[in-house]
Image 1 (cartoon, rainbow, N blue to C red):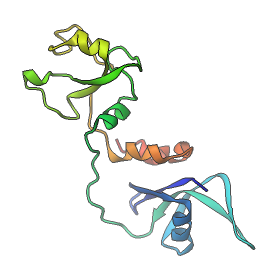
Image 2 (cartoon, rainbow, N blue to C red):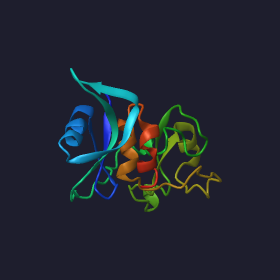
Image 3 (cartoon, rainbow, N blue to C red):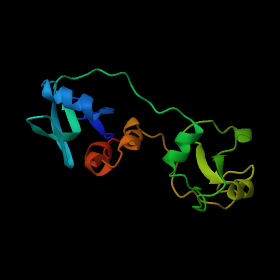
Length: 167
């Protein structure tokens, strides 16, 4: 039972990920309701069989502090699907400032992208337009919900409805 369960707040916003055991206890104690069972999986006791939860929703609203995503190298790679934003390769990756730091470019979500070493060197100390290079997609600050997908463990199809619209 290595699976994880997506926990939604009362308003159906993603709150956290917890273990199947914890989720089952919350449902069993009537502190939450099962929104979506795990596909075909069951929990068994000596005398009962229960559907294994994949997504649950709390009955009471939990006022959680804002959960932002930390600006780290690994999170930028994750946002950009570990591929160069200029040529699409997945080899020899590094970070690139879209507007170079020497030209006043910030160290932020909106100015950092994943790039291969070859494209980064080709772009040099120029903006992409000046180097005649185009970005595959514009950099953006990801939401907390996107990073919850990393804990899906095969449940991502069951979680998509709750995570995809929270971008």
